[in-house]
Image (tube, rainbow over the protein chains, first blue to last red):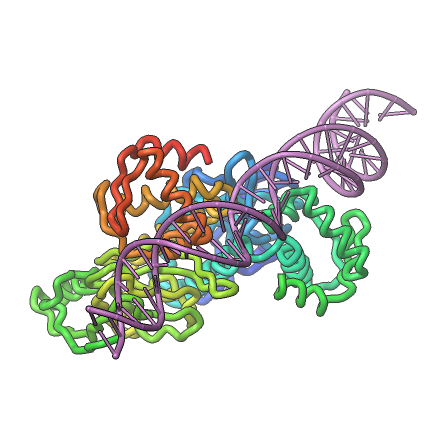
Length: 229
Length: 229
DNA sequence: ATAAAAAGTTGATTTAAAACAATGTTATGT
DNA sequence: ACATAACATTGTTTTAAATCAACTTTTTAT
């Protein structure tokens, strides 16, 4: 973590739900400020097993949300794309993070006092519904992940993750911020197998890959592979 | 599902949080009644993909909570022991169940109008915290499950589940309501391997098994196997 | 009481993926 | 500019678990 400084909500490039709520309550010009922190690539934003001290909101930059497993092997559940709540799953009465979040590129995170969020969560119906909805969505995504990781073959899992990355970047051609190892961690696959499968897909003209540049050439076939394997 | 009839909360053998809250608000004698339904073993209490219509509370009998996967293979996340909320995870703004719950023995379930729960959830701080806490706990359990299913060997996973069953039944000797196939589904293992491993443990005098009767003879060794594999 | 279905078990083979080893390429630090 | 570390790739072998087949036992239905 690098620079940390207080920033007024009205100066923020993102307008989170909390800001929206405060705006409605206090008028357009809110005087609330929160700590904003800058993270460089590979910096840990929150660490599994540590105590929750703030609600966090990703303002800028992508991050990965993962569970730290055995033998230094992680499983990446999903990527966080701004604007997004970080650590939301632990907001619901869990004193410690049960997963970690790490920047995969330079990020900016807004730290909101937990007490303020809790107070507003209880007092504001709209915010409560909003946060709960985001939460519920995370959970159902995780259930699908469980089935995928356990019941699909690695080829289908890599295909699935390529589709996911395409959706996250809203493009069929994108620049990866993840290493091969990390792509593998998204699918619970070894790095060597990840490379092999990516090469296979390239050879089959399903994707084109050049270093970190990836382009999906045959999305419909990728989707078929995803369903069948 | 068999018999369904309205039952007054004060007549219920369990006193859920909602009853507790209503008691405090309206005095000890609440006139609220909810539909109670009886389920036989194997009856589906809620089905993945169907719409949430009520909040449900398990009053009597054990049930399994599972995700329906590919090729008719389920993964059982955990067992529900009364008193317990059913379908709580879908209460948080998910219109459809993302998992299923099925009775593993005769069960009684209380159906609470969703609107009532939502109203009380918003109006009552204590209930909100209570439900959120139960929810957060489910989620962190699921994360551990993900690591276990993906990173442990099947021997460790079976050991882990035997320990879990012992905890659920609060005894080192218990009568299984689950089939071998279902035990396997708790650990994402085939039925044949499940039987093999149970036989191995019996052979090694770690457990004694006689049909559905299971007794854990060496809990500390089981825990070691669970950690190492 | 009996037949059929479901569940449990055992043995053997196949398969999918990890693991291991070695080499090459790219990025980073000095 | 160069050395080192990190990342990527390729080839091969090993391993863990699934799958398949066949049989036995238990439970359920008639």
